[in-house]
Image (cartoon, rainbow, N blue to C red; front, side, top):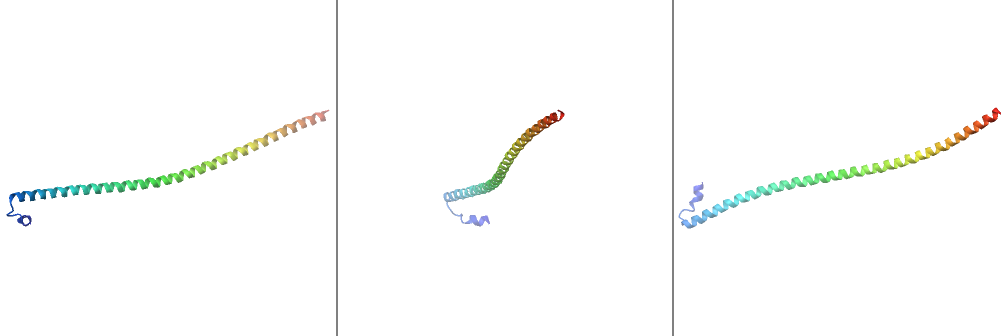
Amino acid sequence: MSWAVEEWKEGLPPRVLQKIHELESQVDKLKKERQQRQYQLETLEAALQKQKQKVENEKNESAILKRENQSLMELCDNLEKAKQKTSHDLQVKESQINIQSGQLNSCKKDIERLEQELKR
C-alpha cells in the first residue's frame, strides 16, 4: 500500500522530493510531540482529579473533626457546669455539717451541764 502512497512522488524534482521528505519528517515529529503532550495532559488531568478528590476528602474530614470538636467543647462546658454545681453542693453540705457539728457540741455541753446538775 505504501508504494501507492509514494507513487504520486514519481517524477518530481529531487529538491521537491527533499522538501516533501522534510515536511513528512516534521509531520511525524509533530505527531509524536502531540502524542507526548496528550499523554502529559491526560497524566496531569488524572493527577488533578486525584488532588481534587484528596481535597474533597480532607474537607469532609475537616467538617467531621469540627463537629466532633464542637461536641467535645459542649461536653466540656457541661462537665464544668456539673463540677461547679457539685462543688457548690459540697460547700453547702460542709456548711451544714459545720452547723450541725456546732449544734452537736452545744448539745453535748448542755448534756454535760445537765449531768453535772443532776449529780449535784
